[in-house]
Length: 332
Image (cartoon, rainbow, N blue to C red; front, side, top):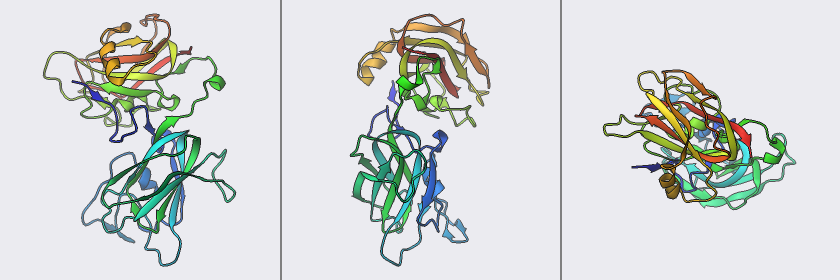
């Protein structure tokens, strides 16, 4: 049994949340955030509701919430994307906002060298959309340009639990040149396609920058109770010839994989399901290696020269958790 890797959104597994603070996204300004600060709206975790929790301004809410507007106009929040990119669509999430959600919202975008100011030219990415309380609203983007910032407009006021901007980073490979890079970096367009299991964490987390902050910041499968092993498939940001691989089990101590191996191939075009099937017959890039708990494993001399590859399949044997995967190579 295998599962497509995706947060719950309809924009495809190659789209990542460009408003993720772990990628550097930030809520820069808001017209008003009296009841709940704008920064909470970008939290990568699902929104919470804590009954009976209040602060000095009223009921504590997990998101961005403005006060009740008593004059004309509407509220807005400006956010910087973690990575410049093309946006396929948004999730405007009003989870737990029931009597205080905005009736409608729209989203604009811009491409700016610095942060936006009064002279910034904004263009509509998501038109005015009616909202419901305690719901996810998936809104397709209507402009394929590259954006660095977005402005969320709510009409006229209220609360948004989470805002996600799903898209692809805009990577200028010509400018980056042919030097060795981590081709499995999410900021370079790498993404997890499918996996055998993601009970405790998505393999997309393997591709984030930095080391994992805790055991929840990685890919972890359930305890396997049948023969076989767990696996995940990653599309590299760019095909390349692989020279070094890093597999980090940071924070995984009683649940790290016993062994690992990596298969790889050049896949010019295929559906997600056909890639899963093909991956069983890919060539071995990294033969089976013993793993240790809470450790950064670095492999170089063990790697086979397969020529350029575009996809890798990480096998963990038999199951367990991995914090990060880095696949270093020269783009070809």
